[in-house]
Image (cartoon, rainbow, N blue to C red; front, side, top):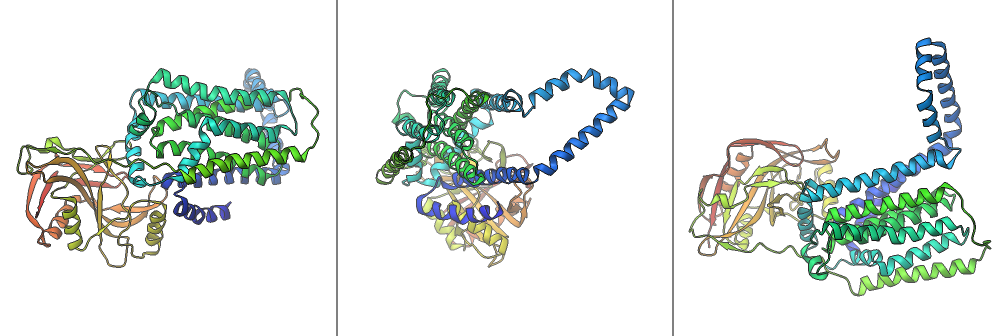
Amino acid sequence: MALGLIVAFPLFRALYEAFDLFGLPGALGVLLLLAVVLGAAWLVHLFRTYGGQIAPIARSIAGSLSEAFTANPYLSRLGRWLHGPASFLRRRLSRDSPSGLYLTAGVTTTVLLLLGFGSITTQVLHHGALAEADVRLANLSDLLHRGARVRAATFFTLLGGATFRIPVAIIIFAIIWVRRPALRPLIGTVIILVVAPLASDIGRILLRRPRPNVGASALPGSFSFPSGHAAGAAGAFAYLAYLGIGATRRLRTHIAIALAAGIAIIGVGYSRVVLGFHWTSDVLAGSVLGLAVAAGAATWVGLREGMLLFRARPNRAIRAALWLVLVALVGLAGAGAWTHPRHAPVLLPLPAIQLNSAEVSESTLHRFPLYSETLTGRKMEPVGLIFVGTKQRIQEAFASAGWSQADPVNLHTLLRVYSAGLRNHPYPAAPVTPAFLAGRPQDLSFEKAVVAGSIRQRHHIRIWSSGYSLDDGTPIWLATASLDDRVEIKRTTLLPNHHIAPDIDTERDFIARELAGTGLVNEETELRAVPPELGTNAAGDPFFTYGKAIVVALTA
């Protein structure tokens, strides 16, 4: 398992650089899937290897507890009172009957998945934290991909569509089914191919949630929640993985099947977000709904063996032909994605609103969003710097002060910044974690190392377009700034990350002095932006501020 995880990082880094494999969140999602599958495989291997030794020990402990209950009169009376529930529990957990542990696990899984779908639906209906995160995730995806061609996302969105998903699922089922052509798995396949997409269609008609802009333009009159592609793919591929694992005995084959199904489900879901057809919660709800249908169908299929429709005869030619058709279909989707890739949406600039003012004053601050936000919309650092000038002038001013513009966040730059942080190596243009202002990620980020040759301590600033300009058309930009004073392991993520110094006003003043020394600043004015307050950033690091912002008017 450890070797698999070690190999996974450079593998997916290479795939990302070559094919833009899902972008950063998708690649990390695949790594998480790999870790989960390998962890499950390790547990299965552990029980297969040592199960014979564990079972007698467990029976001995259970027997000792039973004797203790019998010998103690108080516990004996309690045991008689609990006999009925205990008997029911034993029947439900019995491994000797399909209606025991198998049925209990199947029903429990199905119910939990349906409850998860209900929870996501409630979040969307009541505009909860998950729904609030949808816009920020969509904007972040658009910013990361910058309108680039996304072949992998195109391939998976083709694979998740009914045109490819249904024939691919039928062929995979046929490859598994011809070995033992029972009736129940056949009925289960029909249920999966019909019920999961139908349930998502009904959900979209009832909830009528609008799509993102790209999806609304491409599919006018259609609705978004839940995603039909995600529901159909999760239902079909999860159910087929269940049948495939049941038809094979080798653990390595089980791992390969689980990974293939998981990658297909993640790929289809993420592709719908990357291409702008769905919100993230649409995809999450569709996937959970599809998995619930797959769990219910698999539970029903496995309750009894069912009758065989005909006597199966080993025929390698038929199975080889089915494999060739499957490879041809997948290859056709891949060729279509390669020759006609879709483009990710571009994060559109805010429409410019001109103020009837020649300067930024406290009377105009109420028009601006004054707090940065986490992905779920929680308030973080308030705006401490306001720039008046063009984007090019801002870039020139920071370059003149010796600052570097941060690289965009992707898998390559993320791995590079982790490597530099752990080894204390320089990375002057290291990416800055995205933060949000009015739902949009920062437009510009700059940084400057405290000690040359080290990434562990750095000054950094995030800058957003406000969408406003002065009466002469000069754009207004809003910014937050902080000092990374060390690298530490975060308790929330158990990953290394920068820790910020709590006095963010000192960092604000430092940046203002740095820019003033370039000769590219006309004047600097201090305004009251927010009340004095304490807070924490997304990583939980505390900060304090007296609530003032410095307006930096750059030269024309």
